[in-house]
Each structure stands twice: as C-alpha cells, then as structure tokens.
Amino acid sequence: MAKDLYEILGVSKTASDDEIKKAYRKLAITLHPDRFANATDKEKKDAEDKFKEINKAYEVLGDKEKRANYDKYGTEDGSQGFGGAGGFEGGFGGFEDILSSFFNGSGGFGRRNPNEPKQGEDIHVKINLTFEEAYNGVTKTIRLNRDEPCSTCKGTGAKDASSIRVCPYCKGTGTVRKNQQTLFGQQVVQTMCTNCGGKGRIISEKCVTCRGNGYTRKEANVKVNVPAGVDNGVSMTLRGEGHNGQNGGAKGNLVIAVGVMPSDKFRRVGNDLYMDLPIGFYDVACGCEINIDTMKGEAKCKIPEATQAGTKIRLKGYGMKVLQKDAFGDLYVVVKVETPKGLSSKQLKLLKAFEDSLSDSQYPQLKKCKKGGFFSK
Image (cartoon, rainbow, N blue to C red; front, side, top):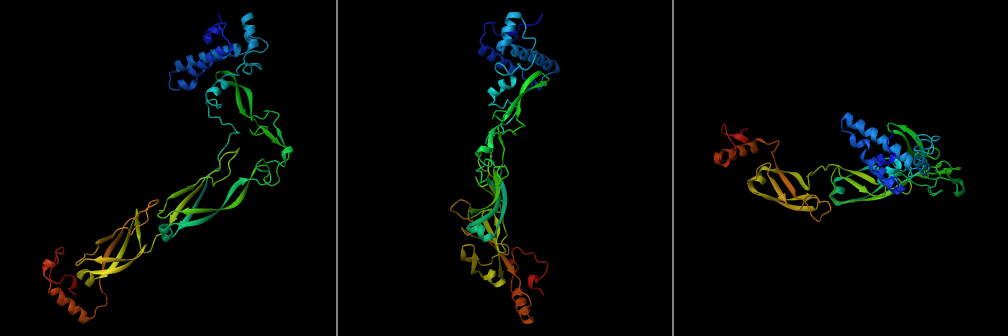
C-alpha cells in the first residue's frame, strides 16, 4: 500500500499551501545529500529513498490541480506523470527554488547570477626606484592600458537604444528553467540562458566602436605617490585604477610592485643603514673626527682613540626614513683600517722602529708567535 503523501511530509490533509511548503523545505534541507557525505552506505541509501519520497509528495501536494486530484481520487493526474510539464513548475517550483530561498538565489550550489555586478580585474605593474627616490619619496607616472566603458555606447554595447530588446527565451532574467533527470528523480534546474548568454537582452546592432563588448582598451596615465622609506619588494595598491567592472561592478585595482636599486655606498637592513669608512692606521690609533656624507647631508663622525677594525659607530637618526612615520633609523659606520701600500725603505725602517718600541701588552688581542708582527717586513 502506497504511503500517504500528507504523512510523508508530516502535515494534515487540511494543511495550507504555505504549511506544505514549509514542511517540504525543512525535510529537503535535512535530507540533502551533502549532509550524508561521511555517512555509511546504508544511511546514504535510506536518505536517498526518503529524499525521493518527499520530492514525489511535494510534486503532487505543491501543485493545486494535482493535490485536488489526489484528494479526490487518491492519485495525481495520470496524464502528466511524475515530473512532467506541470511537475515542479507549479506551486512553489521544486527543490531548486526551495534552496534558492535559503541561499540568496544560488540554490546552495555556488551558481552565480550572470547579471550580478562583477568587479573588474586588477592590473599588476612594477616600478623601479633609485635608492635616493626610495629614501625621499617620489611621484611616478605609470602608463598602462586598461578596459574602460565605451564612450560611444556608454557601456551598453549597442549601436543605439532601439537595438536593445528583451530576450524572448528568458524574458530578461538571463536564466531558464528546465527538467533534468538526476539521481533523486526528475527535477527542475535553473541554468543560464544560452540565447542571450545570461544577459537577459539581445542586441540586434552592436556598437561599431567596442563591437558589442561595452568597453574598450584605452591608454591611461596614473600618478603614483610613492612614500619615503619604501623598501624593495613592497606592494602598493591603488583602488579603482584597474580594469572596468561588469554590470555596474566596481573597477579593479592597480597593484604596484616596487623595486629599489641598491646604493653604491649604503646597505639597508630594515630601517638602518650601514656604510664602510676606510681610515688610516694613524687616525684609528690617535683618534680623529671625520666629515662623512649621509642621506641627510654631511655629518661629523668621531673616531675614538685605538679604534679597532670592524668597529661600528652609530649615528642616531641618520638611517632610512621609517615608512608612514615621522622617524628615521640609524646609520652605522663600519671602520675599515686601510694598510698603506708602496712604502719606501725609509718608511719601513721607521715603522720597524715603531713596532720594536711596542710591548706585547699594547696588542691585547694579538697572539704573537714571534717579535715583529704586522710590521715585521
């Protein structure tokens, strides 16, 4: 004996159309196959059978004519059969429309409305800066080609307003509904209208400028203010400077990859700068004060007495500009002791005499294996 359709949906025979609809919604979501992805084979089979039952029940009770026949004769109109032309089209429309009411028209399957606004694509470019430009900041003009609304048709893609008409197949919706046989029986699914490509309109005569695209590729000059302190490899994003959007969507972005050429004098580590300072033996032994060129101009660097090679002398605030802040890193001057070349015999004798006058305690870090050391020649 066939199960009572009202009993399958869990409603009474006097239930209103709205009560039947709500009952079906609840059961359809509970028994959806996605909920049984990790279930056993038996549980999947039971859910599948139950899913078919509620679809069959709603096909009949969700259609006023079929429900009347069922109430009177105990069966739906035989001439239509299961899932015929009057199947899910009547009443609420079927499982696809049920889920659409819960998932903003997408049916929960990720389908996108072809007429919904779509943001334009981003444009990616690279600019190269000198070390000085990165330190001080600079304004660059970037020349690029991007999609922009056609100035002739104002983005419609048509020759004129009379060339645009509503698609006769989808009635301007951009989608059509069709019966489709699935694992759970025959259902009505919503697909993109192939006659108009989902646009909902037909263009009889296309714009001669954009050939119906609604946009053209144009050359544009975009000014970019690069802030002081930008580092190599940093990306900047200018919103709304990319390609034109579709269906009224926002423009894409301009993404700029920054390259900074190395300095022949400074090495950057974070916001600090390093530079080598060659100094003669006499100056590091006696100490001195040297004027050096920095990114801020000339500055005095004090070399203490008996400074060792490799010593780092810090000049606070003479480093790189800190990005987006009113601050600077530090400059580290690395002492490089330069050994004199091309010494005369007289100079060598003087150095030898000087070396012989030193005691081992005056070379605290030097382990001598014999008298003479640095000036033994």
